[in-house]
Image (cartoon, rainbow, N blue to C red; front, side, top):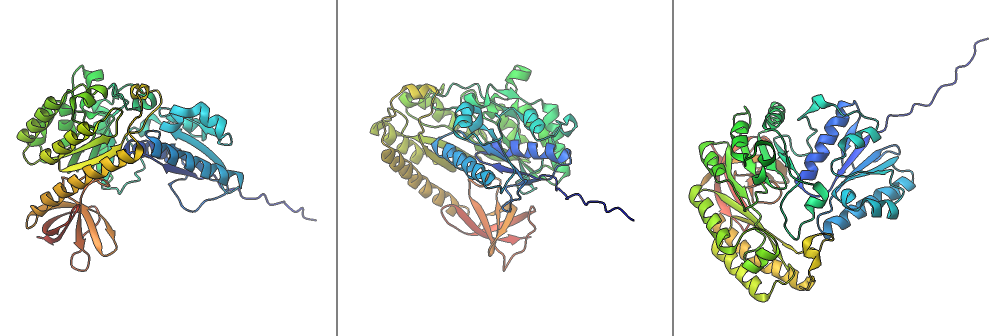
Length: 443
């Protein structure tokens, strides 16, 4: 008589679903984590809509300002509730919010399986049953379209800005060695990346800890030499101590975009002093003029804060006048967020929320007019455009003067033109709106 063998149930290996909140630095960190997990032969997805009961959810949080913190908390609560309902298997939280508020989170949302900080990659991997693989240096699982990648050249920040909690969450500035960054760039280029968007908490501090000098210009030369990299873009360049030799390299190398993102935050002397920015109104104006003189075709982007403690109507009016006079190519504006353990938290948050918001709207109204005027001047001109995606009836791309998500876009009528996603095309601009350009492909 034959003995029946009882069939064991097939248990699928858990899938890791990574959720990314916050800025481009977090996108980069999630991509590195996902690359390590894939290197450990684990199934990993990014923000999958369908969920399985044994999924491991990893939430990479943001803790920068109030709105971002609330979004992170809401997301943690959402997935912890799904865990209680048996719809996911495990919830792990990492990133800035977890770094900054770990004890509070562990107390308030206790059914999360583990909380990790911003520099806990190896510990996260260990918790997920994976090993840190040193040979994967530079290898990432991109969540952006493959033709562009956020490229983090340093971690942390040594600046003393009064309003900013980043040093609390990211620690002191640590530059990555040039040779490691070149290796990473070569890996990305080999896999189809054409644009590197350089990011850090402070690009202009790069190299001081490793090479005893600001070494961003030298890094740019090395990255510019990597075959297959057509565009290199600079974001998050701090104004105080800005290394002007970077502009020389920008002029020398055709694959370094004439684009600079430099958050200036405010312009009046008393606001800059209270913000601990290490500069003055006149020094800021002189720097902007010097940069534009050195690279006349440069697109200059900045960000500003409205409603910082003590910001008077006079301070705000002075900033409005300066924005109107300076005519930044790109500009973002945010309301001040009163952050614990920052130097500004010792001050009274005395500008009402509705006044902060009204001031932001006034600044952005001015910038909308500036952007419209600058875009109108592009009509009839031809630009090299990188095609990012197809959306509805249009192919959508960018010029070298625009970063993804935050800047202007170029729209091509898909019924007239066809373009491969991730390809470069020459586009003549037919008409322009406040933040969009419309054109057609020319040979």
